Length: 591
Image (cartoon, rainbow, N blue to C red):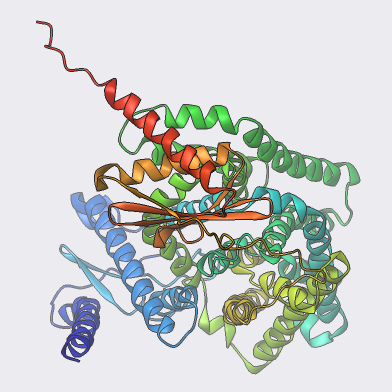
């Protein structure tokens, strides 16, 4: 009881300290005689030598560091709080971004920077991006890390098995919300009037652009939720991920068509075909090339014996391919996911996932906090007409994805439970919808009202999807009409006692790694789902085995017919390690 009370006091102390740290700059500002400059934009371009003196660069860097500190602290604290009431932590990270962002508290909290003061997150005016380039770049890096890890986690065999259903879900999931959104704007006169950015364009153009905004799907949010609940490799999980990737490619084509109509009043079939060929060709080509070269890539990365080389070079490869994807018109994250998927069958994939986990824990919350900071609360509630317009667009956005994608999943082998999960997984719009809306606003195709409506739709779909998706999976039950026969999770009962392998703890992890590699070479498929508990399940057709690591020993359980096989594998690994140890030679250094 004393421990629990002490823990609660500690948590309260952490919360109070964090709140005090966040409030401190504002209190200092209230008691200071220094004055803030006339206005600072989110890009921080006003912090220059002419205005701020020779320390302008240092002041800008200080502010960016404080911004990142607030984003990390707020994301972790609010994520922890919402998880205590059984809401996915990703929602807390998004809400943290909304709270400290430039539209709510960020513009009110003043930060001392030498002889000057500046808002934590300066408020943007019309047309300005709410986050500076450095922070947004960091958020982009975070999304690349998230999707690279997601690709590594994905079961490639399962992914290829469900690529057909994913394709149908992607097509219907784009067409249904696109058509519904366009029809709502086109046939409701008040909505069409609010949507128009310029009187020179036809009423059809803003309607089509709203449809393009609703067609987008954010793979990052769904990937995070599926990863948190260990459902990336389920039939529904790989279908959602595959459909979301295809959605991105199809969305680029749809945006090109709508943009062509808006600028020229017509569409060049040749130009659109080239965009489609380039986008699909690059995605399929990159995934296939990485898969084909996965073994040479693995030998190259693991052959460099330098501290952190595997993670550093792995991320460098993901960043390189992400940049190439953006160059071909796709999103950065598509390149990162394709690389991770291509390397998912390699032996180093598990090691990469383990080493990337703490990096992801640090940087990924910055991505979701940055998404939250894009939410303009005032634009969402500018008037009752805008609220009604936003709720109507949000309703068709949800119906289009939930019913459209769910209906598309039914004829491909999923039951109603599985179709519901897939529909929910395709709901989040995230930053993709806001970027498309921003393009329309900058070109004068849609008005500022549409941007506010897009923010409302994005926020609601992004929050609703994880809240409903987690219980949809936690209630259990297969999502397939004809569930595949479950492979036993534990080995069948054995009359022979299991194997206990005692060893020094210093070589334990090396021994486990070598044993899993040897077992895989012998036809076993290791599962790392419970690796954090030091339990490894291995499957071989209808048989299973389990390796449990505890202190100085390995406990191996398998069926009677398989026990001798594992005894031989243990001996093989012992001989390999012993041979390498015997190869150690001590010599006097030559002078």
